[in-house]
Length: 480
Ligand code: 87F
Image (cartoon, rainbow, N blue to C red; front, side, top):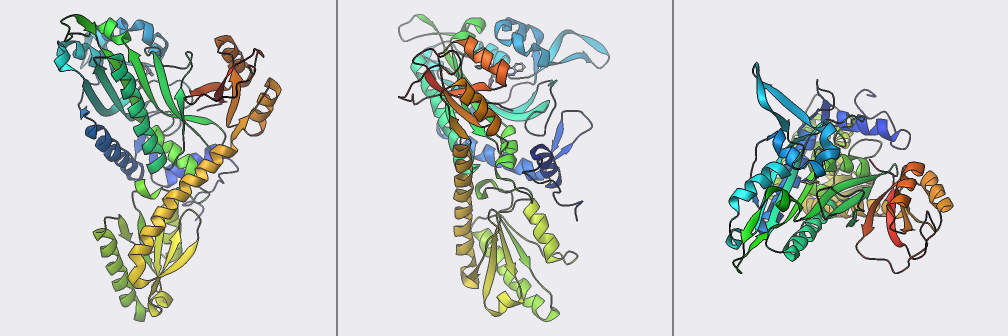
């Protein structure tokens, strides 16, 4: 048994617990290539759900999906050297085709700004060609040198990258915020993970951007995780790639751009935030399987009737659009099945045993609290539906409570260090805006400014590092 189930407790060794859960639940598997993992059915279907939800949203607002090549000529990245310099050590290259050395080596895309914007320059002539709002779902390669971890840091991962070009700065600004709002909706209302939103400081923003907006969640170990970013690129790339249009005023202008992305990293967050000692806990809205029905057939006399009821309920659940599975395998005991479905995080388990049959009821077990209730056989579907909604909101509420519990407001550096040691999590503190204070704090504590909140807090204080008056409130944390 110990071989099959999770053997490490979440509270004892968080990192080992995480690895065990992703491997044993059937989410991920290591591959022969270091830092590259296999996404199995259990995680890929969450990714498909994210794709479904996000595709619907962006298509409603006029974005279209496209696909650009994964190879990027070296000269393209060099054009952009100012913005990409810091990233160069992470780029993977193709230098040969067959046995012939390539004239120009090709990068395997670490992100697609350069190839997409070189193409924008060809597409855009007049203001009538704008806006362009495209997105692609693809894989990305970044040759990480730090220790890798499934979903959180791998050399290859899946993401979506959106790229837009607009006539005006205002339009680009709106796009950045609209996308940020859609990301927040995916994270909070589907993945049930509360996030803080705000702007990165200059030292943490994407070098190619005017500013970077971000969504940050807190993990149970007190470290923050960047969940997604939406950048206002201003005219930085338009200048480098010469993307211009003739406006209604018949004059030449440079376009205003945005880019934004979320990745399979979100799946790692999902595991860490909701999982427990028995394995995954899937929020119903993204669960690959929402309901499992386990017939408890001890006595041959009843088993036929029990199975029949189980099948009836299965069909009704499916007809209502739920993803439900009937686990009628005879070769496993109910207890074994319970463990297995708990490991996979299925939100609701419906049990039907001889006693349930006699009393014309079903037993419902919820994955988040392990609570069991009964419902009349004829009301099993409605009861399940209601339970799924409750689980979805309870998971969010639980995570929100953790976020609040792991947020500490401090007045001075001593309080800062103490909070970081004791509780980890987000530390709200005033900062004078000087990058030197930011850098010193990073050096001395390992914590960085995760974001400057959009809603400026009225209460300003003295800079937590230098003590200068009237700093703005920002959120610090150690991060993944
Ligand atoms: C690693 C190697 C080369 C991040 C890199 O955030 C280049 C890069 O440009 C790089 N790591 N970035 C920044 C990516 C910016 C932006 N791209 C579109 C996003 C979202 C999607």
